Length: 110
Image (cartoon, rainbow, N blue to C red):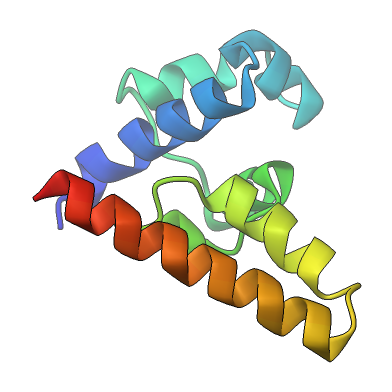
């Protein structure tokens, strides 16, 4: 994986999904208003601490960030938190619905 290209692209994807501007995200992270813009335009990379704050901002883990199969990790994290509040039976039911939707999606993509 080309991390020098992946990191800026992934941040831009997640930021767009969240519906926030690069400036607003930068300021929310306590950085200069051009911080995210510089990362997305490949002029710099975040420090390790900066990267962890970016993951925290998106409510995802670093593992989610680097998982190319996770097309919507922010939503997945939200779902996981909500499912954690359900009874075991309810969580099992929701899991089966998600699996059914995934199988349907795979069939439609063929």
